[in-house]
Image 1 (cartoon, helix red, strand yellow):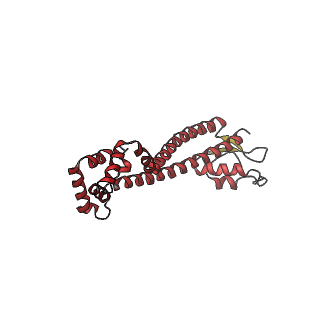
Image 2: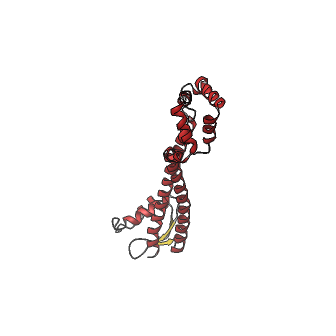
Image 3: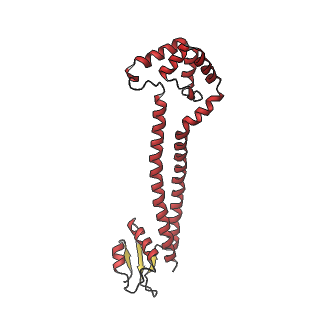
Length: 217
């Protein structure tokens, strides 16, 4: 095989000298196959060792490629960490708020009314008041109004009881569950895509590191 530009592994493989121990050079051949399948180009020439000598990419070029991939990997890894955090937050949202509610005076005011006022208890059960989310700024104002304002409470109870919006699920905070489910699913999809991308980058880096050994011979 004379000095050639190679862009296809099959061509490279077919032109290897018959005496090459393919088992011995298996890691290198795998790296070459991976590199070429990703659009890489090799320039090689015959060598005394029977395995071709690598002319391009040289060690400097390989190092530059590895550095670029390492930087890209850091970027994707940071995004992965962020999405994993979002997934965890969505998964423990209700557990966390169930604990935080205990520090809210409004929660205890609600509990006192719930066990002492039958009419209040009936309205709470009708709307399935999201009192466990009282520490969340999104839901606290609604809970506060429900606990303290009779007119608001009756209006909300009537709405939930009669509106077709709540016909299938009489739960005023159904949105909270839907939102956390959406966030979990979205985070899961992002995490899966990023893990796949990182695996691809790791494979690219591994192949280049193997080619770098070849470039130094």
